Each structure stands twice: as C-alpha cells, then as structure tokens.
Image (cartoon, rainbow, N blue to C red; front, top):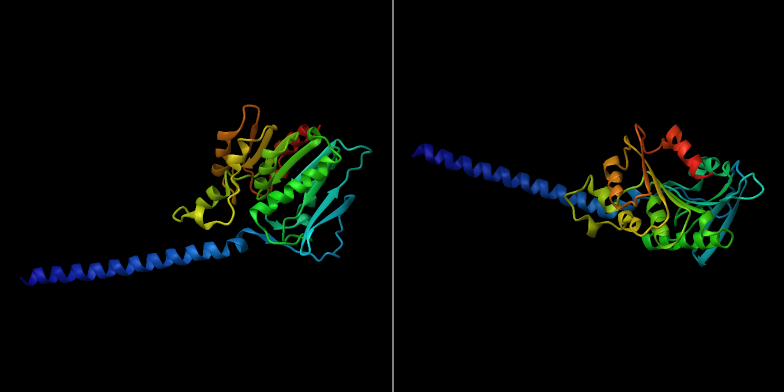
Length: 280
C-alpha cells in the first residue's frame, strides 16, 4: 500500500514538472514570436541614411536624380555613366538590405567597363530616399526607375539586376516589364521560405510584413534569367535558392559558385567571366 502511495506521489510530481516545462516552452515560444513580429524591420532592414545635401564622393562619373513623390517622400537614384562615347544599355541595380548606394558602388566598374550605365535606387529610408518602407512601395519605385530608363533605352538594352534583398524587387519588375536579362545574385526562393528555414514553427505567412515571392514572379519572367549563388552562403542558404530551378525556363541558367559565400561571389572567376560574357 505504501509503495502505491509513493508511486502516486511520484506521478504527481512528474506531472507538475512536465506542466512547468510546458509553460516555460510556451512562454519562450510566445516571446520569440512577439520579437519576430515587432523587430523584423530592425533585423531585415539595415539602412544608412543621408541628409538631402550630403555629397557622394564616387570615383565613377555619376549624377543624381531625385523624384519627389509627395511632400515627405523622395526617390533617390544615382546614375553611374561609363567612359565610352555611347552606352550599350543600362543595368538597373537593386541592392541588398544594408547601407545604401554607397556600399554597393564598388560593383559598378564591372558593368561600366563593359559599356553599360548602372542606375542604383535607394529604397525608402535608405541613403537620401525618404518615406516608409513597404513591399508595394518598393515595387512602385522599381517601376518608376524602369520607366525613366525607357525614355533613353530600348527594352533589349535594359538589364535588371538584383542582389540579396534586391532580388525580390528585380524579379517582380522583370515579371511585368521586358528586359534583355534578369540577373540575380544570392536570391531567395521567397522571403517567407527563407525565414521559415530558422522559424519553421511559426505561422510566418501571417506574421511577416514582407513576402517577396520570387518563385511566383519568376514564372512570369520572359527574359533570360541568370542566377549566381554560392554553396557556403551563410545568410541565404544554397538549399533555399536552388529551389528556384523548379520555376526556371529551359534557357535560363543557375550558376553554382562552389565555396562562395553571401558577400564574395564577385571575387570568383566563374562569376566574373560569365558577367563579362553577358555584357558583350
């Protein structure tokens, strides 16, 4: 009888411990979920801002275009020219989530040395661009830059280029407008699927402010698509990007850079050679 009582007490104690751990796990789950929801903009968007009178010191010839959307919203675009007398065309460059145009200007010579102008746009809240960042707004701004380019260049002289976060904007633009190529460097299958890699246990489709469904937009892209991705990418896993092959056309090209990380693909001869060939 006494043994039965002892076993019963142990079961009660075990249940209390179990409930206690379940409460802790549930609390941690809720706290992390709340942090994801409210801190996502801080984690995803890491802009560097400048005042409107800030002077960029680029070694490359350039000019700025500022387009006032309203009293508080400004689109800032830097147009890098090239040393040749006549441009082959223009590369509309959508940069990553950090810094601003100043951070990505070092990649410009690869294009200008091949005869292309490079136009870079800063997203809302980046550089000299003002306004609130939203997915719909960056899509609208992408179209503004494209329409500006069309005043000077034919569709077969426009290359749409996206890097990291910017691959979402580039892919959406290429899905609704014609271009010579869509080139994506370190893209994601979709932004939701990317975050799902680490936080699969949350209802991300309802939590995330940004979706950037590149996989869906790629289905509508008629231009040739070239993708570069490294096998050692620490921010956008190769396993996530490789799924884009499912929606590529037969003539499209997914180029794997063995050992490439998120930040160093431009140092690999494979990428340099392929880009030079595309820009001929």
